[in-house]
Image (tube, rainbow, N blue to C red; front, side, top):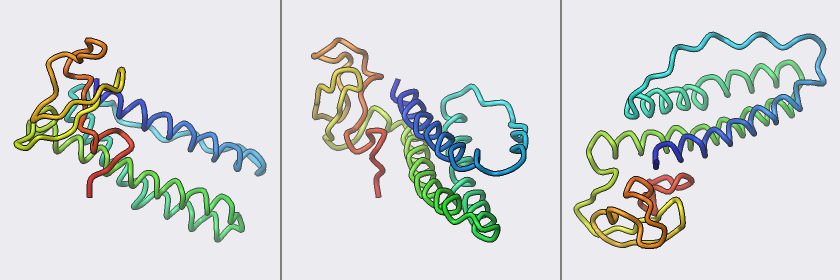
Length: 158
C-alpha cells in the first residue's frame, strides 16, 4: 500500500505536468510528435521502484534540461521555464523512489533499529516504535498502510 501510494501521489503530479505543458504547447503551430515507445513495466515492486527512479532521474538530469534549452533557443521562454520547474520536481520524484527502493531492498520499509514515527496512510493515526503495529488502532488497516513520517510521499530524506 505504501509503495502504491507513492506511485499514485507521483502520478498525480506527472498528470499536472502534462496539463501544464499541453496548455503551453497548444498555442504552437503543427501537431505534437507521437509519444515514444516505452518498454513494458516491471511487475515486482522493487523493480518498479528501480525503473521509476531511473526514469525520473533521466527526466530531471537529461530530458528536461534538453527540452528547456531547445525551447529557450526557439524563443519560447515560458515553455523553457516550465521544463526547468518540472525537472526540479522530477528530481524530488527520483529521490523519493530511490529512498523507497533502498528501504525495500534492505528490509527497512517496515522496520528500523531505532524508534521512529509512523503514520497510517488510511486514517493518519500516528505510532512510535521500531516498526508499525500489525494493524492500525485507529482504522484497522494492515501494517502495509503505515509509513515512516519522514518517508511520507512528499518528504525526502537528506
